[in-house]
Length: 124
Image 1: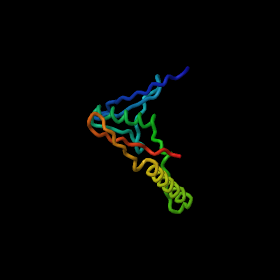
Image 2: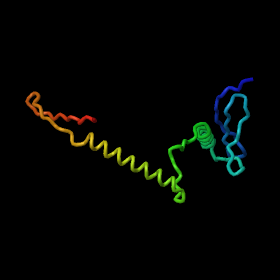
Image 3: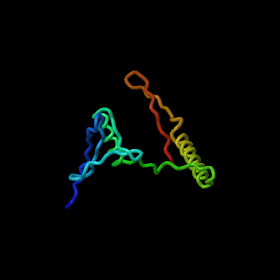
Image 4: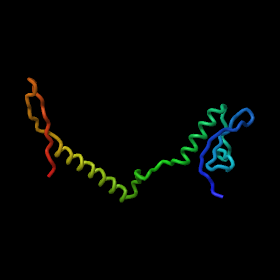
């Protein structure tokens, strides 16, 4: 039997409160959202459904943190890499300014008025 992937979110009344529920596959049992080993409870059904939706979204779309680097002062290699990245960004900024700054302007008369035309210097 193949499970069909179909994420759903819902809520369940529990006394005078509501508990958010979710499931990932058709035919699977509903799961509670648990924090600190206790199911989460809300005063309204809407709040419970919204929390179930947020939890399901976070479960299926985790944040990717591959671009972030832990900066530990004791790690000399990390400081060297951060310094290299900063130097590389400064060099790229200087290159962009050298190539694209101070464009030459030529004035043409068109229909009785003057129009400025900007020319970019080409990279060699």
